[in-house]
Image (cartoon, rainbow, N blue to C red):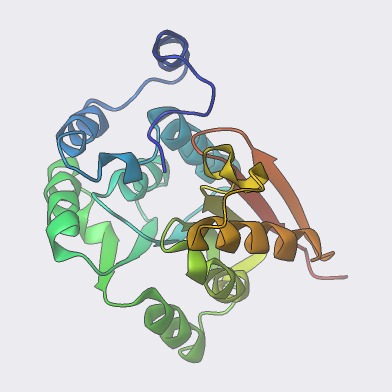
Length: 224
């Protein structure tokens, strides 16, 4: 987990941010507050937030779901990128961290557009499927417990519409995925997930070396 892209110096990161679309001041405040937490590395990098917001705009996203919200940076970045009728569902189990998120969502004026599900994500995803939400989301983001990645992806793949996009965080895992000596449970889980995706022929997959590795998966269009 990291809040700075792999191999990116602080100076080069600053240059990128200055010459990109810029970081919303409120997102900057949220990032600074989160930086004071012991778990601050769980927050995505600002350049990743910019990239995810651009992806949302490119596909015209209006319905976004994320698994793993932490202090709400990704949810806020993507929700701000969507039109006023865009809606977000976020899944997390920590009230402590998401209370920070709620404060910033409220300050940004998007709190009514973000529904927080404070319970195990699989329960939320499965209930959405049972309620008929299959193929109704435009965009999904997975950034939670690594051992659950395959289960989260399978549900999100059902929920996202054909042509929609699923983004999965930490898939390069600070280069630990190629360290043969690293047999940590999370490292093994990410390796297994990456192999699982490689074998799925019906989706388009690209791993982008931004943040700690962001995998983009496009759901196949339905055959005409």
